[in-house]
Length: 164
Image 1 (cartoon, rainbow, N blue to C red):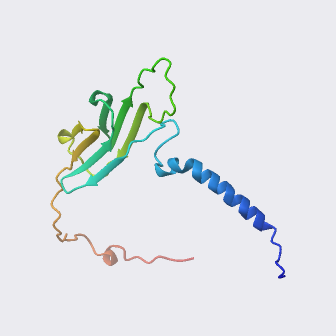
Image 2 (image 1 turned 90 degrees about the vertical axis):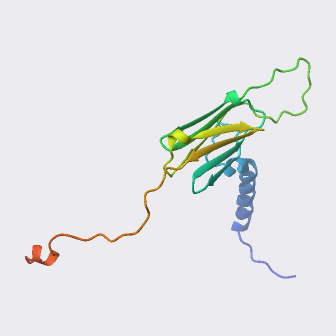
Image 3 (image 1 turned 180 degrees about the horizontal axis):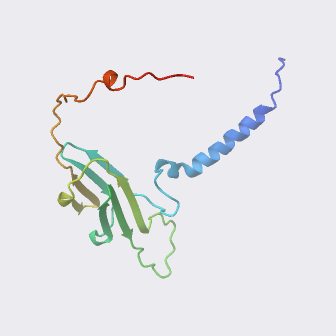
C-alpha cells in the first residue's frame, strides 16, 4: 500500500467545483445574453449584418402581430420592442407545462456607423422582423499629402532652458 500525502485544501477545491457547477447550470441562460436583465424574462434572437450599403437586422418574433412590434432609432441606438399578450385561460383546463413567454420584450443595439435616417425600413413577415438601416455615403477616401506651414521650431524657440 502506498502512502498519500494529505492535502487539506483538496476538499475545499471539490466544494468550490460543486458550487461553480451549481451556478453555471442555473445561470447559464443569463450568461448567453449579457445585455438581458432579470426583469425582461425573455429575449428574442437577432442577427446583425454589416454590408457596404446598409446594416441589416433580422429578429425572430414568432407569433406576434405587426401592431405589437415597435422599432425606434434615436442617438445611434436601434430599439426593438414587442409585446406578446397572454391568451385567455381555458376554464377547467389542466396544463401540464407552460413554457411560452408573455409580456413586453426589448432589445437595443448601438449602431456605430452613420445612418441615413430617411431611408430606414422595417418589414415583418412569417415571424421575422427585418430592419434595413442604410448607411450615409462616406466621403472620398483618397489619400493626399498636406503641406505644413509655419516657422521652424528651432528658429522660433531658440532660447535656452535652464535646469536646476
